[in-house]
Amino acid sequence: MKKLFYLIIIAAFISCQSGTKNKTEDKTATETGQIVESTINIGGMHCDMCVASIEKGVKELDGIVSVAVSLNDSNAVVSYDASKLDEAKIEKAIEARGYSIKTGM
Image (cartoon, rainbow, N blue to C red; front, side, top):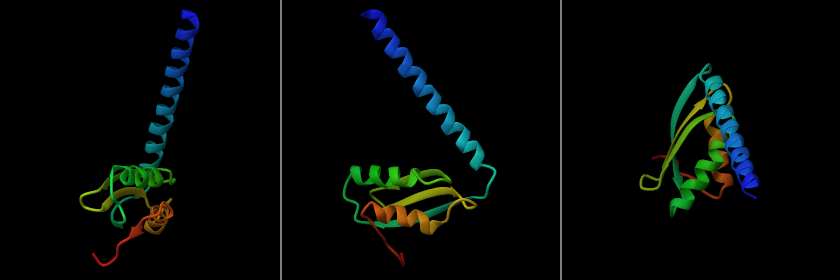
């Protein structure tokens, strides 16, 4: 029984490590394009779960380098590869999660 337990732990560790390698390679690939940083004002956030939802939705987009959402400031600072993505697509991903984009701020 102990052998099975150790085998499961080792398999889990190996699978976690392979996922990390892929993410590092993706970041290296995006560094060759034009990286743009943009601040997007967001409406409708109420809690940390809102922040996590927005970050998850934006990170799923191809070309995202980093995203930091602030509940206090009601905004997201997003770095992305402009050759793969534009700000309108990021805003659509945020709106798809049920939040609004504030304009004129």
